[in-house]
Image (tube, rainbow over all chains, first blue to last red):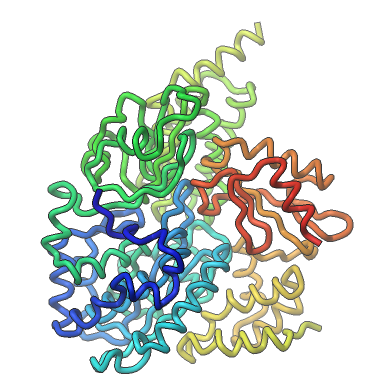
Length: 418
Length: 159
């Protein structure tokens, strides 16, 4: 079992610099400083590493898009982890903060960045305290600050806490929030690589993405690229939650059958119930049926199956669930989290919630299911940012794959009326 | 009148040093958070004070503060704020019944504060502890895999 990010995750006191160094921590820096920054970018490109936050954009390519010769540049680590079902970054930050710092140093060196921010969701005060201690240790040891390890390279990293808003995980909303504004998304272009934080070229990467970089520098791009499938390279942290016997974060080689993750790693379904549905990549991706459980867990295969790998949150539903209730809960979430900036998202999320509420409460009517489909069509790709599409995913997929659940509730109602 | 505590002032100095001088507005959320922690809410006076320090208008501070769920602009919250995750992974593992249990125990509805101002109970969207659901967060502490017994233990231990 290949373990890159979780190799030493349960080692005692891994969060301290002393123990982290004993596991080989910060060894990549000297290797990196011996190369030109552009060589590091080429290595990350060659490794095939893709963003682990949700969009899956190739990390090295993202770094290479920075506007030429414009300084200062910034690195923002997206630690806003708010996607329902996802809790992998929390475990990394809690148990291994130095791995992120090391990854951020490598990225900053490669992209000639001298200031980095770790944007954490407001509820992560405990993790921010842990990270502040880790940063202090790194400064004291000369891994941060001026002239790191005599390389002539300077870097400062700071923590920054949000204050409760799912939308701030969207990169441009995150930048607005970090600048002290409402966390509403920005128009793109310009993309952050051209005008990001303080209108300067900015790299934004998820915690997990940055945590992979030390391995690539230490072991080489080829070794990383040899793990996984042809197009989905490496490993992915998967948060398995819901109706499984052993919920938890598991490091999975991309391409592993989803069945193996649910039934082997997570111990199978609770009470040995039957699997009904699973959401492979967090609440923002379409849910799939039990008969699709052999789909390999990688970007391409999940997409071909009609869903997405997303943030790597595998949510498992057993046969006792009526998915209308699940859709209603997620619709309520997206309604709450819609920032209100654009009409289709603001109005659409509320409308979907109203209808689902009626169906669930037994006051709906059959035509409303098609109305939901219609609303989904009118929101898809028409919202200002991806939150609108995210809100559509659970509702549209639940109707497509489990229409019988809707009809069951509606029939009960008709029976009552007669 | 609102004034930051001495302890908060020390933190503010450190916070302001994180951002470029001409972008000190970046400190807006951290300063709001300190005010919220100090007084249990963000009062109009606190917003004026933050506006003065960061060279923005009080109305602007309010527009930002009202966007984020962790700031309370109305009555102050209790000594302990219980955020009860009600999102999908916790729901699948029975959080609704536990929320009802907690509300009954405290004799309040979600969204309310107990008469003695000790507890505020809130429904909360996903808190990123999905593999440990059902879960709740009491002030800054996460409690995972909770049950009625654990809830009793936790709440009874808080003075």
